[in-house]
Length: 291
Length: 341
Image (cartoon, rainbow over all chains, first blue to last red; front, side, top):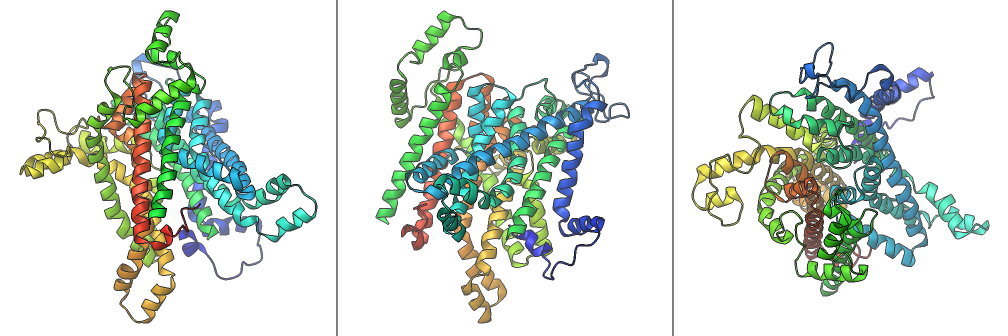
């Protein structure tokens, strides 16, 4: 999307870099959406790093205080076991953030390595890689991740691998397309003349120059991965109760919503959506800036 | 055209075979004993042997695969471990409810997304464009299960505008006699608009939930393709000739931008097939998505793998239909510019 380009692009040449603080402000003014995304991510990163120091045990139940609404003592209320929803929500930040980032990084790394090889070497390798990505893309991603976790068994690493597998073909295609163009460039000939082997050219020269689209895509994928993992947890596969995870919390609170206890599902769900939103805002801005 | 069709048929056959291979590989070969998964974690050795014999898991892998593939080709997706019924027929019973939900959601997404995308592209940076951008970002970061719960809480629990989020019709209302399986359409065809409205009311919340997410890719791709079209030489020529802007937008812009949009609709169907597992679970909708959910709950791996193959095959065939239509309209494609990727 070139939306950002139309609203943000500034035809006048960039002024000389002013003081440091002013630079940040300029960036924030030119990229308001991405700035919101970065701010949300920073807040969540703080919660993930230091949150567990300030809140108590996410599994502590209190039989006398089940399904109490939000109050000064329980900011987000308590669930049907009397557990503090706020505590569980804070503890969950680390898990959801790490899972989203790791999935995106894994898919981007593996996908780019394969994509560059396919694009640069071409031939049979390229043909095989493209047919395999066709097959993987023949499944809706969420459905593929679902059957993978269902057969691998419920665990956090399995969910990470399953969702990453579903997103890898996108990175393969992006990087391959770029590598196809890059291999015609002069620096590739220069590298060959300098005596580099073909794999050296592919991974030391073509790969770094083919990564830009993958980086942008990775931000978007991190957001979708958070949604997918939470969605799988909501369906009861992957991350299981009583783990403090936002998707699990929404699933556990879903029935209480129908009897009026909205807080058990509303707060964790809002956190999932705002984390996904942060990644989308950044990814959208990166995409817009490219065009 | 014949050459194009032949090439397309070959790659499609390969992809369909690939789907079966992937699902077979995932279910039988990955770590995790297929017999244990079927018999449950507490089964003893005798029971495991029994299960192996029952599902042919004691035979060589190649033989298992060939008999499985032969079954799929005949349309036999196996036997449910829980109900002992044919997975194919259980899925077919649930297909129409899912289609009714999915078709309305995709239709509504197009009705909203296409005009928004066109207007956004025609006035870049204008308020429709900003609204579209917000819609795209919101839709792409929305959690279906959470949105659905919020809508249920407000519109059912609080306001009582819609019936309980359970099944396709409220309790006690009997469905119209079977014609197509789409309740709203059947009721209308039988001349019972009241019943059609009742069915439509049960449809509204789940359709709305799906639409918020599905409209995002439609708007995004329509806008993108429209922006490119409006930059083209023929649009510039049309404008230079003094043709009114509205006519340029619709006649030259939208018509040419529609081709990528048709592809986009295929992608949207893919999102829908994944998303409807969550939406159907949330609204207790008796479709194939809820079938998959129940299969997960019951540890019914046969049913789940049947569902995955079914969805994969539907998705691939839909994309083939779209590509062929595309090639019929646009000669550049059947000459082989795109399909050789």
